[in-house]
Length: 130
Image (cartoon, rainbow, N blue to C red; front, side):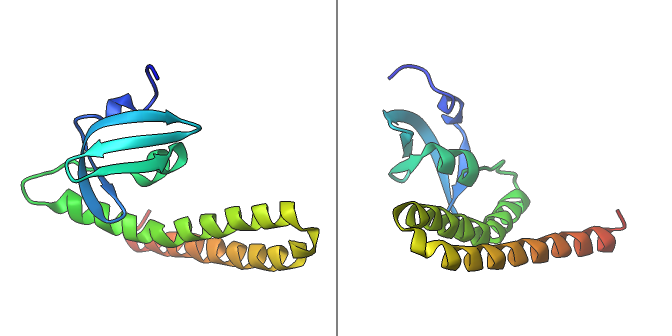
């Protein structure tokens, strides 16, 4: 399908869903879908997942970067789950206006989770003296 923005991923290592992959090639399938050919298997993912969920990994001799990347991936997991819920709610609201009150309640819970995450970041910044 020609050149695309993810071609530069080839030859690099990424962490995706807690697993490390060496990317050989990224093939555009159309409709915002891509096939990521890796050292382990081919992964069919959306452009959004490629951009947000594939974390670049530098493989140092001591493995410190890998540990950090795994920690970041684990910390992002709840955010990814919330995004999935919000996307599902948007679809439900579009299909049935009666779902709006429930979607609003879920939205309020997500806002609370975001506020807690911001508080955690502030605590980390204070602990580091920044």
